[in-house]
Amino acid sequence: MTASTPLIVTFAIYLLLMVGIGFAAWRSTKNFDDYILGGRSLGSYVTALSAGASDMSGWLLLGLPGALYVGGMSEAWIALGLIAGAWCNWKFVAGPLRVYTERTRNALTLPDYFTHRFADESKLLRILSALVILVFFAVYCASGIVAGARLFESVFGVPYEQALWWGAAATILYTLIGGFLAVSWTDTVQASLMIFALVLTPIVVVISNGGIGPSLALVEQVDPVRLDWFKGGSLGFVGIVSLLAWGLGYFGQPHILARFMAADDLQTIPKARRIGMTWMVLCLFGAMAVGFFGIAYFAAHPEQGGMVRENPERVFIALSTLLFNPWVAGVLLSAILAAIMSTLSCQLLVCSSALTEDFYKGFVRKHASQRELVWFGRAMVLAVSLVAIWIARDPESRVLGLVSYAWAGFGAAFGPVVLISLFWQRMTRNGALAGMIVGALTVILWKQTGSALYEMVPGFFAASIAIVIASLLDRVPTADMQATHAQVQAALQENGY
Image 1 (tube, rainbow, N blue to C red):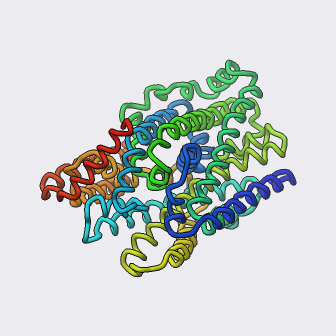
Image 2 (cartoon, one colour):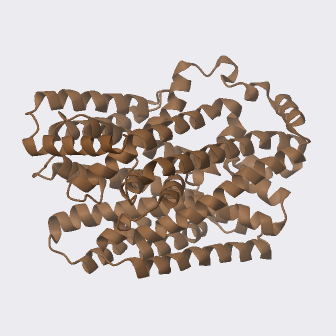
Image 3 (tube, rainbow, N blue to C red):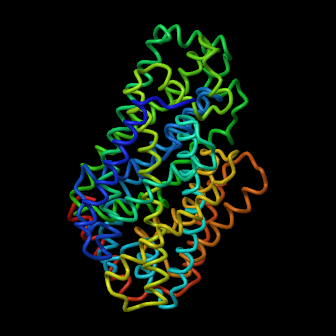
């Protein structure tokens, strides 16, 4: 496929806008706190859309539609699990984490929070959690690089090896320059673009198929099993649990939790939750509809389905270019780039913060100036980007597969630790260490077994059990730790939590 002039112009305008926002954010970045958390200044609208956009990466417009195109409605369980998990994360984690991180020496990162929450003078928690972030985010960032490469490869006809660099370049640039504010402001623009694309595209696809009824008839003609949520009985209990378990991952995703930590105050959270969940539901159902009704479209137009037969994750790209005016198609395809850039930029920033705050400042330069930390953070954005590009170099990589593994790693290693630390006063440093180690190792080892059960499930529950047992066997938390916990609970109660 060769890109038309409208596609090139639309992409260029979009990319220039994102880089321009990065330079604007640079002017507002005065210190490392600004670079990592934007000075805790995000309002409800930016908090909501930034959390949503940082969550919904390229898999939303590539991986999820591709899964529905191949598997039909049986893949929709993923979306139900994600909606439930995201709502619980907003409801039960966002507010408490915002308060707790401020009360624990204004913690800027998850490793920072864990260290101060459990008064860990040994810094083992800081080291371990930072390592978990670097390992699993390297894989997660690679999924974004792959998604970007797929887009540039499909739209501009460039070889995969070149598309890797084109897809990553703009994201690296504005993250490098503007830090958290650039990422959050661009996320807001990108989230708006994504919802526009995912509401418009399935409507046009259904109309082109002749309506809902004819679309369903065509899908049934292709394969009746694709209409069945239970895949004709072959999707058993383990399969449904595995798909729903994606929702457990939310409690441990550092790039999403960072948005909660950056909210300007506790009152921002409820409004942000309503905005964020509305946006998420519309986007998820739109993405599923694209993949599902795409089955009907390419059944009626098999001669146009070459790109999708080669790689089902290109179904949104194919429908956008086939059904829309080139200028509109350019906007819709920019939405894929928006989804990729929004999540990749957040991931790069979290990795940078772990390397800067938790390794460089924590062990190498304890008294480094704010300017030095900001510039070291920028250097780490570039370093992590190069590692992710190296991981993504295999042209056979699949976006959803990479996301699945990284999502499980964070969900199991951090999710139980975050949840239990916010609500159980008796939890200790050793309990947190046990939870992280058991969660991460269970995910890695379970993945090797080839079991049908998603590694998130055993990892999450094994980590939770490890936290409780290790904490009960450990000494009671100090009086200061208990007092801080009581103050946080009191502040939450005063604000209706």
